[in-house]
Structures are given as structure tokens and as C-alpha cells.
Length: 458
Image (cartoon, rainbow, N blue to C red; front, side, top):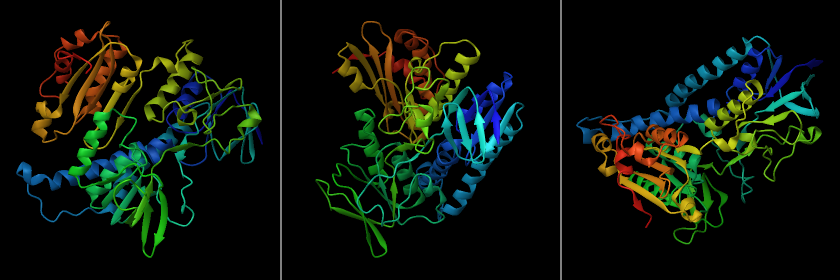
């Protein structure tokens, strides 16, 4: 059956549903297509379930540390089945709420199925042909399965399938020292599993500030999480009832034996079955849809939002994509991807948050710069909570005193960082923020102090 619409939105992630509703409320006839779960990665296999599980792991961690606070807990036990059921309740509430919202929106028709192009402005969804002058792709991404030796003969977990475990692994080997791998590594160690992290890079979280990588290593050592870096030939082997991960590192045993292995080595865009060539939509060599600064693809009237365009694999970047497209189309704005300041967080405990440029990027630029630094051991709020890992680092251009970037790593850092992000968007000089009064006792109250202690780069 053929259906004509004003707009089609493919994918119900963190951009598609909001765009579909806003277009529908403007009077346009909109089709929204989703082949599996409403809410995309964030709600179903990303932020929502993982942060719910991080909260459970944090509760277990605090219980183990209770004696240091004068609180004594006997016979601590983590029931992974109960953790999973709690997590699923949270996920289902969000997923079902979003589907109900979309199906109840006037001018919005929901189709369940897999979409593929049959022409520049035509999508097939099972037996239906949907046609519209504007099409918005919000199809997301999935865990990458790397071509490791042994991958076809050894069972493995991904960031999606590990959420289905009912029993704790006795020894979880995590391949990948990025955001996903580090969060799951600490989480399952706190649940009670032995954990080893393996990565081919020379440091954990290599895209982060070098000081941050060092502190992550300290945190993991404190929690007895083993780390094997510079693994130059990672492969999988099956040995009787155990899984072996070959690493051939410069130091240590060339093999690690464990009960489960998690592959956390990146994300692959869900673009391979869209038949994009039929619409003239170009992709890069990794399969990400190429877009311009306003999220337009190479095909007239087709846009790509969220993880599938390669411009930030975060919920907040996906939602901002929606805001850019909606405001430009419906409000006559001229918003661009390049307007936004890069910002993200790594949700190990304590969290790491970063905005703007890293120290390495500032040094490479050659521009004169200042830096303020304070360890969390000198932050009252962190001392009071007994969580003193981490630091605060803020980078400022020497001539203009504009803030270039910041890394906050420690308790409350994921919230405190927004003080700096807001100041950067407002182009507030560092001196003005340094003179502001913040509430005590908080982590954010030390931001003015750090800015008052700026020194030239060493």
C-alpha cells in the first residue's frame, strides 16, 4: 500500500520522536518508522539501563565501604537477577511512555518495521510504501563486532547482550578501554566479579586528558581491576570451560583466562540495510552518513540525525541535532553543528566530565594559555564524602581570558561542569566567573578558586 506524507522520520531514538511530534504539531502529516524498540540506544541499551546498573553497583560499593563511615553491613550479596529486573522496569517505563506519546500525537502515524529506500523520496516498510519530500534518518548505531581471530568460535558479550545476564561472571574480561568498557568493568567488579580490562592503546580512555587516564588507572587499581594495555594482538580462544583472550602484551602473560568476555570496541552505524544508494545518500568509509553543518545529506530533502551521522555518539548530541533541524525548518533559524561546544561525561564512579578543548589540543594550537588545577583531595565536599579521587583542570586563553576547555573528574563533576559550559556559551571571561559566589559545600564552589589560581602552561 502506498502512503503520502509531508515528512518521514526513520528511527525512534533521541532525535526522531521529538522531531516527529514537532513537525506534526506544525500541521504536517508525519510518518514515524521504528523496527524494534522506541527510545533508541539511550533508553534500551545505553544511558538508561547502564546508569541504573551503575547506581546499583554504587550502592554495593558504599555498603562495602560502610565501616569507614561507621556503618556496618554484614553478609553483603548482589543478586544480578534483581538488578536486571529493576533496570528493566525503568527501561520499560520510558520505552512504553514514548510509544504511547507518539501513537497519541495527532498527524503522526507510526509504522513498525524495517525501512529501506526504493527511490530518492520513497521508503519501503514491509508491505507499505511511504513517500515524502522530506525524510529524516535517526537510525542509530550498534556495538561493533571486530574481526578478531577466534570471534566465530568463542561466545562473547556486547554492551547490549551483557544487560541480559542473570548470573555474575566469575571473571569478566573487557576488551576495550573506552567509555563503555570502563563503565562495565567497574560496575561488574563492584557486583563481585573478577575483572580484567584489555586494550591495544597505551593508556585507558586515550581520548581524554592524560591526567584523567592516570587517575582512572589509580581508581581501578584501588578497586582491584586488572588492566592490560598495549595489547598488540588481541584474539579469542576457547579452553575447556573457560574463555581465553590472547593479548601478547609487552609485559605479563600472553593469555588471560576468564568466564566471559565483553567486546566494547566502538559502534557501527545502522545504515547498511537502508539502501541509501537508491536515494543518492553518501556515507563515509565507516558507513556513517555524510552531512553538512545543518545535518543535510547529499540528497535533497534528506537529513541524518544522531549516532548515524558520526557527529557525536551521545544522547545530548542527538537531541541537539533535532533542535538544529527543527528550528531551522520551522522557525527560520540558522543553527549549525559547529555552534555547539563539545561536552561529554564518562560515568565511572566518580564521574569524569569534559568540555571544550583538552590540554593536548591547546598545546598543539600553539596559542598562549593558562591552566588552573586542583586535586579533589583539596575539595571539602569530596573529603566529606570520602571520595577524593580526581581533579579539576580549567584551560584559559592568556590574551582574551576566554575559557578554552575544562576537565572535572570527581564526585559531582558531571553536574558541576555545566557552570563552565554555560560560561563558555555566554563567552564569559574567566575573571568574571572567578569573581562569582557559589554555594558551599559543593564541588562547583571551587571553580572560581581554580580560575583565581591560573598559571602559564608548564
